[in-house]
Image 1 (tube, rainbow, N blue to C red):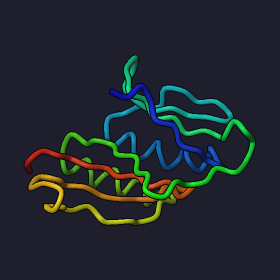
Image 2 (image 1 turned 45 degrees about the vertical axis):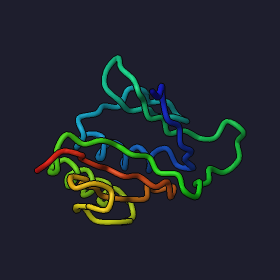
Image 3 (image 1 turned 180 degrees about the vertical axis):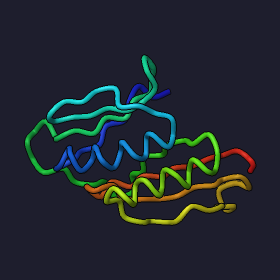
Image 4 (image 1 turned 180 degrees about the horizontal axis):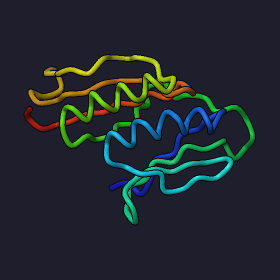
Length: 127
């Protein structure tokens, strides 16, 4: 359904450290690396996640109610992505665990990237 998702960053190098670690734990790779933008996904495929300096040259800001949801293949990958994100300057917004109020197998973790964008890493499969 999605071609790509784009979020703003005021510091691409901090964003790169955060998203490199999270993406590696999820089996994703950095597809583009430019001075003002980076992109992640699977080689040759979509959807893609782009992090960039805003084109209007104004400061990047976070949206209230917006969450980037990244799917993990299993629960240990959720744990690894969360750990990598926090280690790279991300802020905890909810440690890895079951959130049965979403559905019985929803195992997720929530972080804020270095710019404050909310990121969820989730596995929908049973343990």
